[in-house]
Length: 195
Length: 195
DNA sequence: GTAGCTGGTAGACACTGTCTGCTCATGACT
DNA sequence: AGTCATGAGCAGACAGTGTCTACCAGCTAC
Image 1: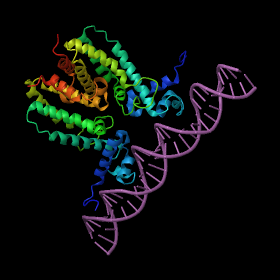
Image 2 (image 1 turned 30 degrees about the horizontal axis):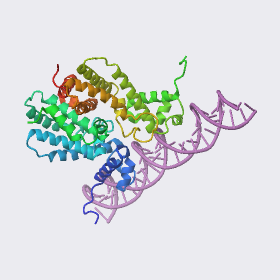
Image 3 (image 1 turned 90 degrees about the vertical axis):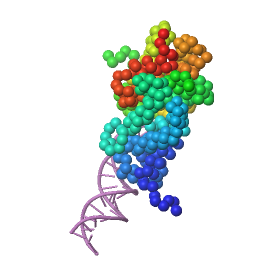
Image 4 (image 1 turned 135 degrees about the vertical axis):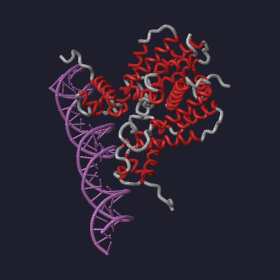
């Protein structure tokens, strides 16, 4: 019954890693614990992940895929609404899947710098998204020349917001429940006033 | 010779931790390795740090002290120049002492949430600085009412920039050496055009 | 001079990542 | 059919880690 075609072990290990990172943070994602959760021996993961970092990288890559999926589901045609939608997706992902979000940006744990000949680098996966965002920002501000810098600024702002909201600093400093207001201010700052 | 009054072991352990975190990242700061660097037995740190997290927290606290010292050295009287100065200090610290900066915001590793009855919480140490920044932002924009939200936005922006610059994403997406330009754009976005 | 405290040593335990050798099924080739 | 190679997972070992515990050298105070 369990399932017609069994999911390959590699995927099951990443599944287990995702569960672990969401439940207990990236520190809990060990080779052995992951194997235990997947119901295999402690040495089994080694066939797919030569090292601890490779497992973590695979889990993080899963995160980037999830996030890309959410981005792809944003359908707003209007540039400004679209930027707002993408921003909300980003912040929403960071809030809902906190452990994943943190792991995804722990470059000290991840590969993508060294070795790994096949398979895209993790960081560079964000470049196309940056390109789309820059186009949208250009449309909003009507200044295509300054769009890259403005986009980098907006990008950094969103990333910082995600980070701060993640450890409650937004609430600490501003009072609870003012995220929407803050996001609106951020968008206005970088894109100019609405309409 | 070595030194007239010997530095207490607790401080020497934190020193060693700082060295380690700067040289090899927060993952390298272990109780045992730190003890080794300080030339004491592997159990010695336990007298001062009951747990690994406590050691890491002490190292992070040292970081906040360093950063506070740099902030205190900013002398610009003009509000806008002062904000710019503080921002440069923040980004400069993140760049020069990367490992420390990363550790300081790894709330999953640090205490300050649980236990630790005496001694100020780490996160809350940033609140007074936020207050000063909000005052300055209010002076720059002439809108004291919106200052808190504007300050939170700026704060998040700086933190995001520090993060992205730390792993080279700024360069990846914008080309190298455009940090000053980006900072200028960020300040303009949140404080309005210069003068 | 002896009791108690402070600051440190040393051994043990469970756990981790990594390495290595092993088993056993499957499938290809002769 | 028989052999061989390969893929996939198991199991044991090793060093290193955090944590716990017992122990001991000095010092101070009565």
